[in-house]
Length: 128
Image (cartoon, rainbow, N blue to C red):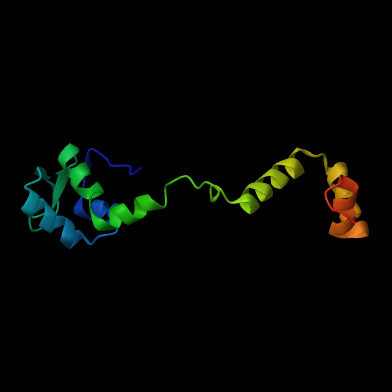
């Protein structure tokens, strides 16, 4: 979420969005955004942009802001539905997470000692 102040200079808005101040000034003219003069700056062209809903909406819809927003999505583990291998991996991970550290050590030692074949025999899954 972008933190817009009620009034921002083109330089501040440019820093926030990743565009140049010159581009922001062009948008001010093209979109007819409201501005107020910034006193005490030589030349008299300095201004503050009044950040209202129109400004927020326009800036949020720009290409750079859209690509930035893509990074804000919550990542979920990718599981191919109907893929038995993925489902099994997920279940094994859940079992391992539910075990105590001591139980995980013992299971790891068992797998190292007996191998996958030995583990499957003990579970009654593998035929001899």
